[in-house]
Image (cartoon, rainbow, N blue to C red):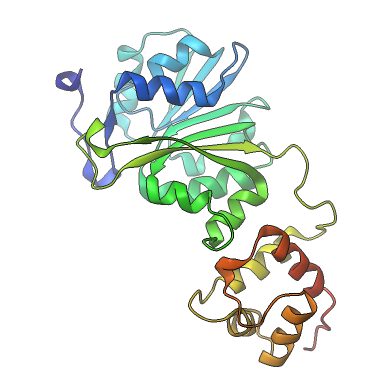
Length: 268
């Protein structure tokens, strides 16, 4: 199979995966049902596509590389396959049926942007199974103590779990690091029922992570443009230590902090 693979474009972060066991594991993690529409992102030479068309009602494969997109229907001949040549970050997700499934082996450099795009869409997939850099997968699924803006943002919208680790040598050409299958299940109900202003919540979280090496008191003071005294009181009133670091907080901690932040007078 490797001999028939197209040449990769290094600038697009292309690495082909042909290992049958891993491809089947990705499909299993996606839990595809016969009535499902699957959005495959970055199908490349179609090694994963060939499995998806056998399981889904429809597969819409969005490929940025024009040559690969043109060749895909000839490599994977299936009546339920539609190939779209486009940057996934500009693709209209609202054009898809509700409760579609995302399956993707994506370039590492678009991981954060893709998660944000899927999360903030008015037509979120019911499930997204994404093969990404192992370190990034671990960051998305991190627990308090190792949280980041990415993990807080992702876990606000999704139930996140980790699946199989994929060694670098299984790709052609091998990347410099191992990959891992990241599974994101859409939350059917909001994580916090009383979160009236999600934009304000994320403004607060971004401020907290604006200077990871500083204490929350200092990072919130700078990020929110409030005094250190007000930032310290905000944290204390939320039951948090002013010397805590942002990575230590749970999503519930951020929620409590958000509720407390709303009580601060505008002229503080």
